[in-house]
Image 1 (cartoon, helix red, strand yellow):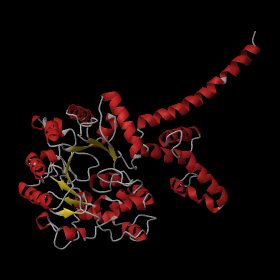
Image 2 (cartoon, helix red, strand yellow; image 1 turned 180 degrees about the horizontal axis):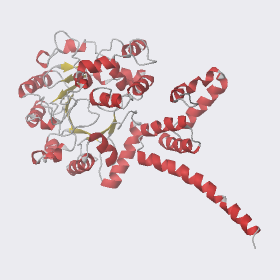
Image 3 (cartoon, helix red, strand yellow; image 1 turned 120 degrees about the vertical axis):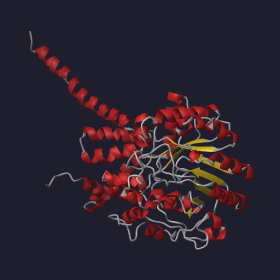
Image 4 (tube, helix red, strand yellow; image 1 turned 60 degrees about the horizontal axis):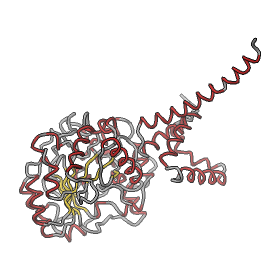
Length: 350
Length: 110
């Protein structure tokens, strides 16, 4: 399967996606998401702090998942250079960042990935470093086989997608054979102590629905995952994060192709939760694109909606005061983060 | 073509209160309580509802509880097993009455 970009699909254009998202959904109020925020006194949406720096190290990936909001895959060549990484290191060094969240694509495929991790750790021995590891990358090539040891050495927190504890549902979303490889990779991480009580090595799994429906309650599904993975495969992990699929990129393409778009949006809107809205991740996160531009979140990054500041749109111009004073850009895709128990890169938000 | 069943009507279930609000309110309060987490989990209740939906062959209920069970983290295999439970009870209910047939047949036979 090729990326939407390689297919020259109309939804590989952010402008096209935004055009679709701006069409009114039957039954929704006013101007869409901003109206819902306005009614609860949250519009314009403002940051509360700046704790998390989420970095997209590139769109290259060894997988081509059906729902990927990055439209990542082997045919994507965008990659963060060492020069941009140096600028990120300056921000980490000088601005009290608590968490550095490395994502992609498969972030490990960036040729400077290991150098970058080592530099971050040398700057700040205590900062939390999260790697969003797709698991199969560990087995994809001998040069990645020692990633579990590397992660352990630098006390990396691992967040890995596993949509279900069976192969049928996992492979339908992430590709043939992904489940079996993911299980092998999880065992390798467990062997290093990841996910084991008392090891201090955190292994979190990420669930997102394999279709046009909302995620299950996080706590109940976590128990089910723990039981199934332990009983059948002897695998342990720390927490399960449940994430709602946002209607952008490949998931938007799926929703439109399967004629589920309108019903899905209606459901997200009907499930708008003011408490979840107050806790959205864009209020304490800045997302950095592979080319150094700054965004309110990873989803706005993919929609090419740069932060609404005049003097701090690129990592080279980082201005904390300006970023903390900005208005976060919201559009109808944001209903995905405020539905039900809320959704973020760290799971539910309430 | 006009049909008695329209999928869009499912969204209007709550509007039955337009014609009789006090009883509808009581029903929906009760409904909400029934499906809340209790001695049974909300997930278990959803699977029971899915099985019952097939027993009473209600298209609205099948639509609603197919989505609901998936939103409770069930997969297709679990959902189909729930429907087989309904089918087994329905089939068993027919077959267990065969004992009456056998009794009667024996009663009137030499």
